[in-house]
Image (tube, rainbow, N blue to C red):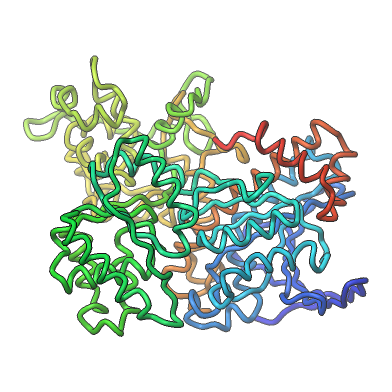
Length: 609
């Protein structure tokens, strides 16, 4: 697709830039404009997203964003999409839409507009320590316009740590919103610059330590050890667990795909020698998992040693096995990874999107009351429109209230270990496909589930849903289906927040939107998964997982980082008015007042719940 050139050449004191406008995909919902320029004072080309939304923008506050989904070698089957300068802005549709929402609210950030900035970089080809230089280049080193007031990333942890050091040198906050939680340090040798959002699995370490047996070994790599090892040791003491021994292996790199082979062999031999059966793996979660699984399989240890992965999903042991050609075809087949993780019972923690049931759990944990108005609502924020149907009880299809009363698993999920428990209590937890207990709820409470919400997973897969003429929310798909036919919640199947029911503490609205995360995500699903007109058009040939990674794994964290930045900016406005916003906009990366006041707002005022 050809660019439309803007008739503007900017002669800036620090360089010369020609600005072009990036075409907007047909299904994009953002209202503003992406531009791109190359400045001879900088190493990288820069994208900027501006969206005034009818607001008078006397000043702009810019958030620098970075993910890895559009790397020219890694995510693109056809690197032309990356090199055409379209992939990166196309991938950032979610945070761009959020900027529209923020700028459309004229009652705060008076005469101030939020912008996004991103660099055209080949993520995986940059040495890890160059991510500090990347942030420096975008800020103080080149003094490139627009000036940046915050950084929001969804990157691998080692790169995040280096990037955060660059943010610290610029005196601006850095938000990390991705599940690859290698390090536990927030304070980088001075004032806090790195802020961890709840999409970051830092928050899962304590839970993993609860699950681990009394004695275990730990496997780190060089990249992760410095930051995560102290935290693991501290939690082991708190939980009265014994670390039998720890091993640090080299970080995997394609420059030398064999560098982990011998150290991994040695680590496994030490497990056998010391009679240790349980391992906490805190290495990079992708290729190192595959090396470990193949080595365990080769030594016939894959069923004898249980692995607990601190970072991301055990399935990476097979997913990335295709890159282990040096270990032989038996490894690249994925069989060792599947056998090790499935037969060996690997356990791990991964980030995930909130759903109808997790909204309830989060509200209880954080003490939020949810919606205090009477009545039921959809997760789109609107009053609930009843869609239930009554199915008559039969000898083979009826509610089992006694079974609900005696179900220990359901009681634990709901958080009601004693006292009366009915199908009506359980119904709100039977709506999401994201959790396995929905199958038990469908078995115990089929009639109640279909009366409560016909679109609930526990209704759709139950015996009460037997009318083959009933259609799902998209008006095309069958309503009554086997559980295997329901992939996930609210993606590109025609569902959205209006199809999930909530009341009181079961309703959890986003701070930056009048709806829930369920509905917010459903707005973007059709764009990210479109065959034509959205992110990764079929003719642009992204690798298959690029779309799900952008929509599910990366952009929600970036969007959270953008909004956390905005909350800090609002805090500055509340305390210092327009003058404070102007000082923020004029930040020259050495103004200690801006750095300190922003940090105070983030530490004392901004609610990360």
